[in-house]
Amino acid sequence: MRWKDAREIGEALAERYPEVDPLKLRFTELHDMVVALEGFDDDPEKSTEAILEAILQVWLDER
Image (tube, rainbow, N blue to C red):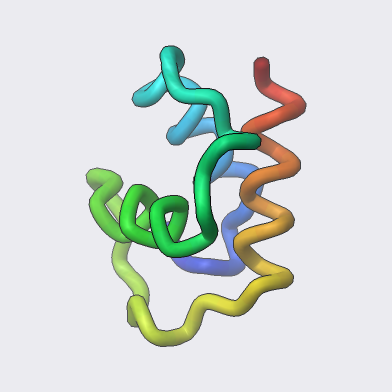
């Protein structure tokens, strides 16, 4: 997975962290969770606020 794969990342987060309320996360926490996902293979420094917002939206849609 790469940062551009917001749908895949959001779905993976929803599956891995079903007990977490994504609305209570800071972007720094979300970033760390994405980077820790198995299969994530991108430069951690290349994330942006817009990318994290897109991932968060997918995660919310999966709930």
